[in-house]
Image (cartoon, rainbow, N blue to C red; front, side, top):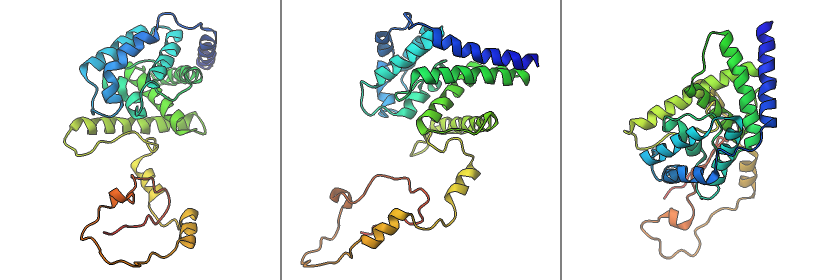
Length: 268
């Protein structure tokens, strides 16, 4: 009973702490910009891993943050800095601290409400600390960073869980999937890279269950077939031996097929 009361007080204290804090004077957005400038090539996908100068900046940013006000200000500064550049990758932004081995205690993302997310993170961390404490488990910096990444991921993909038990279960799956992705990418012997997407809180079995099996045609496919006209070769006198359909605008980027059972084929 005492533990339950302490946990409730911890949650209330976390909420009051964030709502009452004044804007931080310790964290300056100009300094944050300078710290993250060497990271641009990684954040825009030009290089697969952050350079040493980038990680030095992330570690410097971590050192700036000590209070709750610092966390909220740092979150806003990172968001503001990311808005200055085009083609910033969300996955790269959220994975930056982990890749540099400098876990930070605030959300890092270019599309996030720093006020509400910091509040959610503090409340969630208080609950997790109570839960972990009751099991005799201590949360380290890496675990805290992963919790923050999961909160960012939930925000970006609109994921909501029915209760705390389901959230803890999905967090553990998310954590293992992220570890696998990072280890795979660090291997460096693959012609492609993995990234954290909207399926990151599903096990392999759960993902396969959502994709396997006949689902029937999607409504949009049925409508497309009903209204499509038949293609005919009319007035063709000279046919080229080869054709690069990419230059004709026919080949589109990779798309999420969803539950449709037919994607169509183009043969040259």
